[in-house]
Amino acid sequence: MTVNRAEQRAATRQALLTEGRRRFAADGYHQVVLAEVARAAGVTKGAAYHHFDSKAGLFRAVVAEVQQELGERIATAAERYEDLWEQLRAGCRTFLAAGTDPAVRQILLVDAPTVLGWDEWRDLDEESSARHLAEALTALAAAGIIADQPVEPLARLLSGAMNEAALWIARGGDPQTTEQALYRLLAGLRIPA
Image 1 (cartoon, helix red, strand yellow):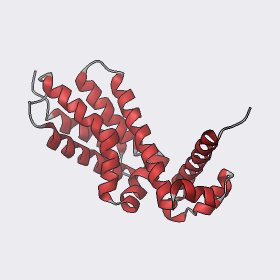
Image 2 (cartoon, rainbow, N blue to C red):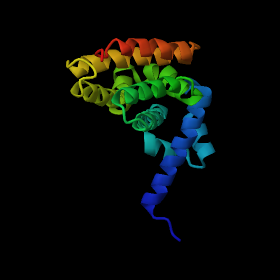
Image 3 (cartoon, rainbow, N blue to C red):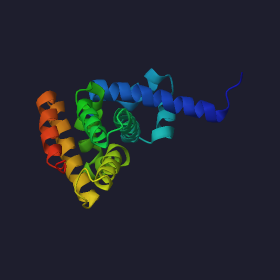
Image 4 (cartoon, rainbow, N blue to C red):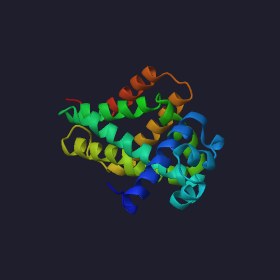
């Protein structure tokens, strides 16, 4: 069976992403050399530059991939529950737990904010997990579980708090006490039954 050019390009790109992700997670951004990633992926340095322009380009693609997967993980965790409040708690719990995953910790929480810059890091977060948070808060307000209020500032406040908590966990903070603190914070949003 012959492999067409598009399939070959896709396979090369995926091999670079996979090896780049492995190395960024294990060694951190500043210790990774693009030529070594290419060699380990079985492609030329020229192919790596063709697909990603630079180490920063490869890293950006890896960050986007990890963010996308995290967003999907959060959505899946939330969808396990029918109760809207439990969906919110499950999504938040899953996001915080990501801070204990060594690859997520190194790529998303340690390196991405400094390598990509705060604005780009926030944009990627907004496209993935922060969007799910805003959707959950909108549903909770519509159901009368939390006060009807503008969702965007509330989502940004909670997203910022959870990002900081995940960063804290990534740097050695206690996940269990952080989760309990988050639940107490969320409970303050709930309208008493």
